[in-house]
Amino acid sequence: MIRVAVVDDDRMLLEGLASWLSGRAELRLVAAVATVDALLAALPDAGPPDAARPDAGLPNAGAPNTGLPDGERPDNGLPDTEPPNTALPDAGPPSTALPDGGLPDAEPPEGPVVDVVLLDLLLKDGSEAVANIRRLRAAGSRVLIISTATDRAGVVEAVAAGADGYLTKDNDLDTLVEAVVTVAAGGTVHSPELAFAWAHHTGRLRPRLSPKELEVLRHYASGLTLKATARRVGISPHTAKHHLDRVKDKYRRAGRPAYTKIDLAVRVREDGLGSDDDRR
Image 1: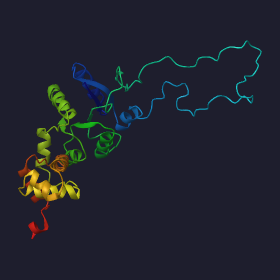
Image 2 (image 1 turned 30 degrees about the vertical axis):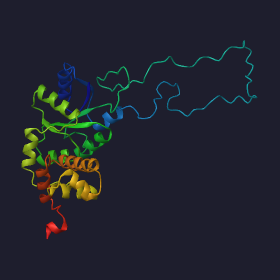
Image 3 (image 1 turned 90 degrees about the vertical axis):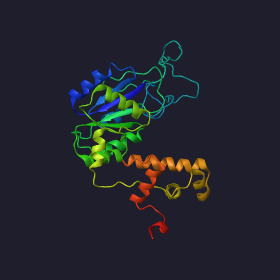
Image 4 (image 1 turned 120 degrees about the vertical axis):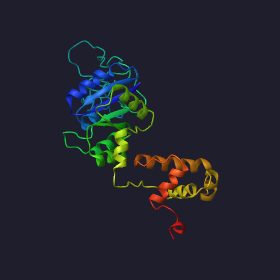
């Protein structure tokens, strides 16, 4: 079950998506809110749950100070009785329910409370899309942009900030569900709208590579095999592959995917990442 949240200040859209997604067994809408602040405020605290304690959120005062020696209780003229049982009944695991339509799971879910957030680029609270995306990613959720925004630069910046795809709001339910499933599985939604935005983007986003990632990239893109690259750099083939995977992921997030060795060689040329000898 993929847990989905929607952040959009269009009330009609929120209600429509809730109705749409209610009929899909593979998805569960856990929140529909107007701002990222509202969604993050609704997420359960990562620390130990305190909701089952009557004094939740208050300092633990311990036993009251009666001024009597240890073990003695004040004489109030009443028969000696056992102290009242203040324990709450065992309610089971804490609820992870979110407001606005969320239902509690039988058990606390593993991983993020929200797997995929459907986010509008333009919200009336004045928040910036890039900042919203980064906050959601930091909370452990993947982000799919659902918007009517036609600002191509904004779309490109959103993907570079960590969004996992972009769809316009005029797509049908099946397309949306397929996109959510793809994003939840760790993929990227390469929609025609996103491709158009990249095709007309005049700037070039260059990912920031670590020195070791750059060294591995240079050798591998020059034509060496993975094993030969590893020997040249002085690391194991497994570690070399890890660095290459990170390089590919960074280029993907910059909106310039490089799936093959040829793609990587092109990126090296485009970004001037060749060795000093290559640039002479």
